[in-house]
Image (cartoon, rainbow, N blue to C red; front, side, top):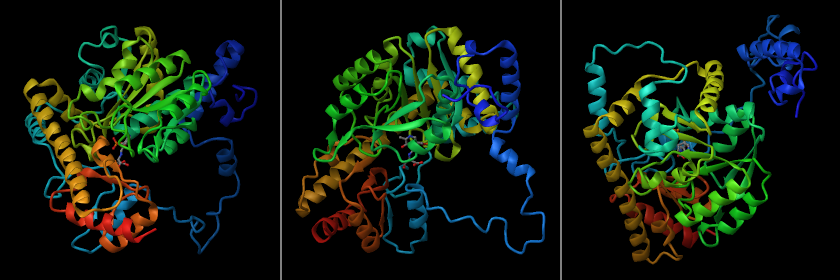
Length: 467
Ligand code: KET
């Protein structure tokens, strides 16, 4: 632990690690002041302050750019796949990289219910574009908590859940991570191995220290349940554990209900803090309730947890950046104090969240008819993905492609973790213009009946021709 306030070093002061009882009242006041100043300008740590007062390289007439030393960063492993895809002029190119839904015609889909909600919003002249509160749209927050925890959740009825609108799933994870780094006694977060590639970056930047727990067994292409229990069993008491609520990305492998129950018991017995990432509610099974079951099991035992929700996939609101962070606490009073601190995380980061996407979601969730229409459209998306799994599996079998491809139909959610290695992936991109992440993950939602034969040919060639 770093000292709370022993030197005027803004960096160490910014770290709220020591219990407040250990310092005197005057130290506390001074500390609050300095923290306020540091919060007002988070980049102003001690090194930055020194750099600011030392001679600036811009002070003379330099022909060279002050950024001449900046090296090119690599593209993002997931979003970079789309960048490469966009540059490819081939008419047969296929983007199975990013987890974004496409229709049978290969087109992005705006849900009909979203268009209806947007129309209603546009027609409502009473709506204004004022700033939202720091925590976002109140209706949206209430309805989001209900969606993930269940309409009859005692935690909601007892007012011990605080929900804050954030910038989609990523923003919710980031805000939750930073809240924990500032106020939770354990700064280590365990994430599954493998996991969504952005998780380690989000949590490290939030100020947490990232470790992994075993999750996937390449030999069985299923869950390494024993490894998971062992790793969580030997994690330090109180550690944070990131759990994918459903449709684990990238593996498509979820624990069964019985396994979730064992995970819950183990985690509660060791006081491990669950942080759920719910980016695919409704996409795994087609049912919003079934896909929220893991989260609800942990909330039903009365314990605390965090949940990051995204509406990118299940409402197709990718670019609207709409999501929510819920923190389930023991009491209403604690929840309200927690919320007051989450606001201090958000305010200097982006001040307050955008209004449009949250208004769409709230409009749909509060209207019975629109809600029903949404569930039907969501189920249709989930069913199309499941049908793609069957078609791809059947096509590989029909072609006699070597290997057991049954994992394609066993895995759940948007992705199939094919088992193809990075050379095979590179081969498929080079020779067949098929774009996917180098770990062999394919987005099933990017496929259609028309493109399955092309993918099947590519996989066949890759597994028969490339070592
Ligand atoms: N969690 C998981 C598990 C996840 O797969 C994503 C997105 C997110 C959070 C964040 O989604 P947001 O759009 O911030 O609500 N995954 C897909 C897109 C991406 O990488 O950004 C993907 O894996 O393709």
